[in-house]
Image (cartoon, rainbow, N blue to C red; front, top):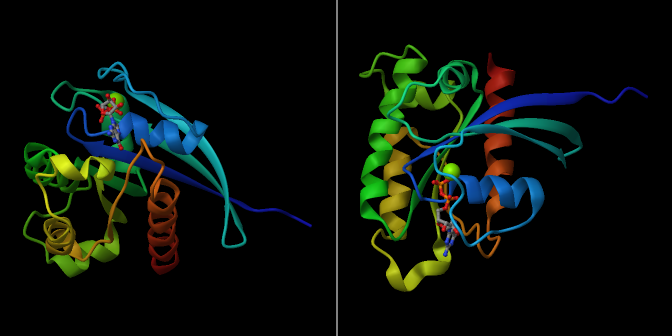
Length: 187
Ligand code: GDP
Ligand code: MG
């Protein structure tokens, strides 16, 4: 019996402080740390998953400090097969910042900016995530706004997560894996 493992490169994108490192740590090590991680550290984490009768080996790049140049990020944006776009539901600024991350990705993938959204959807597996859903009382972005931005970017799946309460974290990655799987099959 030969076990085939699918190895996928995943990139976590989003504004500083939205919980990119917390989401990654919750997935990889099943823990949450209240303090902010060093916001400048950009690193790759490995996660093995058994899902829908397949073994997956995920290489996850937890990005940081988008403004400074990073060769690692540059490479991962180009070679990355799946992208998690994260904002925080208690920060409208982080929500509005998604667009520039999205445009940055299109540039890295050499997509013309005006290419139709439908075509994009089939080409880049993306899941949009509104994190910190446990902070509902501080909410600045509605659920519908989250759904709509994902739809406008290109019919991408959307879900709200909490790295703190471990809500929908694994699910977000599973949905992304499904997107990557169908993208790989189609190409
Ligand atoms: P990053 O800059 O995007 O990597 O954000 P971090 O993962 O470092 O998180 C920034 C801050 O938000 C830290 O203080 C985290 O503890 C906190 N945080 C992250 N995710 C959540 C969450 O789901 N709920 C709450 N309440 N706080 C969170
Ligand atoms: Mg971080």
